[in-house]
Length: 161
Image 1 (cartoon, one colour):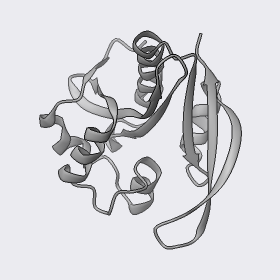
Image 2 (cartoon, helix red, strand yellow; image 1 turned 180 degrees about the vertical axis):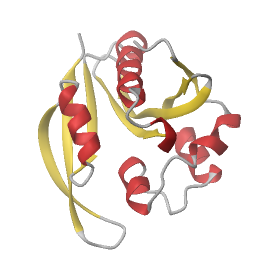
Image 3 (tube, helix red, strand yellow; image 1 turned 120 degrees about the vertical axis):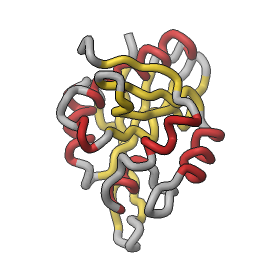
Image 4 (tube, helix red, strand yellow; image 1 turned 90 degrees about the vertical axis):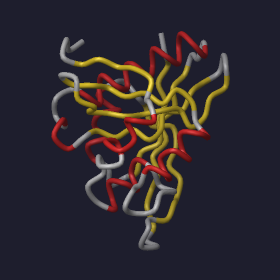
């Protein structure tokens, strides 16, 4: 673990920073497909209200990452969602740290033996991250991008030890 990375539950005061993380329509689609560009505090607050364990990672005391669970079944699985990293903090281990933190929360608080993740085919960085962290592809489903084009949503899973 990077000593410069700390995590904590997300607070309402964090949302103004987090909404600035997605830099393009595509980035927002990857991390929050139902959102409308540009992401705003109201949209993010609505997502948080429907989800569990919204968590931020701080890098050197500055909010650098955010994620939560969009599905959870105690004793069965948790599904990771809304994972996003601040542009200035990318390629510094924030996403990996955040995924590992969320896996720990799934194991400890939900007794989940399995973590599920969905990642769009165009999200190369995400697909490579999840594969490197031991996630296996279990399915591919068709979805529509904001422009109406067909995209593949890759479904991945990892057994939590």
